[in-house]
Image 1 (cartoon, helix red, strand yellow):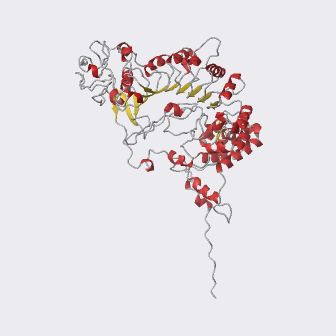
Image 2 (cartoon, rainbow, N blue to C red):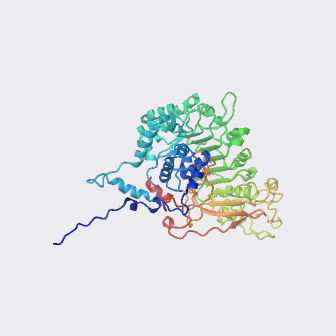
Image 3 (tube, rainbow, N blue to C red):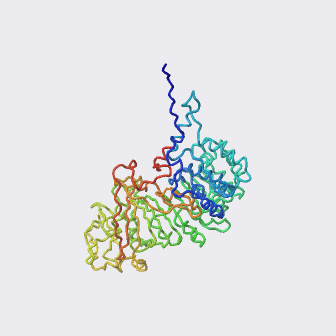
Length: 625
């Protein structure tokens, strides 16, 4: 009799479903008894610094949202799991790892690595009869677990939490869980809140009162259109007196009330006002009997036409404000681009300046505008466009970019390292080459004259008239020929007849390296290949292990990075030119790296950032949001 034996089904091991890098790498130097003794003797500060490198986002102290502060250095949930495992090693590690673990908390929706595909498949298997059931929302489950943890031990764990970052969909839907969590976090400095709370919507009144009563140490708050009553309550001095960052979007209140609100916030360090008529020179001008504005480190003004150069000059007249201001952004304000020299003269500590304006008239050459100069400026975003009312062939912006080029070539910006302009010919102007101008241009002159000593063509944006001034080229005076510059030495490009000669003589010619980013229009359309992105150190000084996306620029420390850096300046949307000062009054172009081969974002090149969980990038992460 033949016996039939049922075949055993091959049972798959759960570890086989996990990616290889999550099973624990085989170390070439396994731990020994001596290494454990050395680890036990480490002081608490050294242990906390090591734990900060295990979970870098636990040291994130920026006032940015959960989406903007995400790091491409690795999977944040995996890092959080590793730090939680360190807490369970022994009592000494627990005492030093818990403060790092609960300092800055993130509620991420998914794993940004290959592990998410495995976990998503396992969440569907709810039962043997319904293997494709709808799983529970992971982000909501994590928020509820965190709420239970801090509410069970509010005196110890609740006081440690200073930063709480929640994804957009979670903070817009889970109002009850968010309010119950915030109620036991008295030392909270920053938290992601729903947008309706910033507009004083009635459905968010309970949450607003909870934050005001339970979190008096909030450092950043936003007020939108409709929240004028809540904004005026700040002048009483009883609500959020430690605010460092204030963002006003579309609010319209009395200028005197605005002055009282800003004057009551003595810890204010960053201010953003957009689409508002309330901020004017009356608010910035110092007067007797009114509270003075605190010295700001970052000032972002967007669509505030009532702010003029007179108000900014009066605000910067005090020594405290001059030493404090580091970042200034002006977009469609009452400040004319020709007045930037006056602002730079009273801002000796300014590091980043961004101006975006649409002009309807040519540059006032006849007014004798002095060139711009700043010894501290490092980043300049100069976006000047002609207004639609001026016509498509006016080319009014060429005079402004010529004024900028002459200021740079005159040595007015010895520490300038990055320049962003909406002029494709700016690299040629900095080399002394004539841009390809149209014959019918009203502000540019096509010229082929060269200097006798170097053979380098002249910059046609600032031409010398026969009388010694700047010639105003127009169709009515085309018969006037500019004075030849063959008798001017190459080392001294500014003659004695030039109105800029006195200021340029006191400054040395540029010798530093300058990165110039250009694009064709405001929308960031560029038909060139992908080039190298901006490389900058993004690690905050207070966060030793916080690793962030290396393609973003650290232009703001208070959450205004998008307003200061602008949109459309990424490496794929702008052309990058590296210029090196020749020491004779011009720049030399440095050959850049080879462009990326065809394939775009789908290619697997070495320059693409990789996370600790695999080859996921910023582009793939955005698909989860």
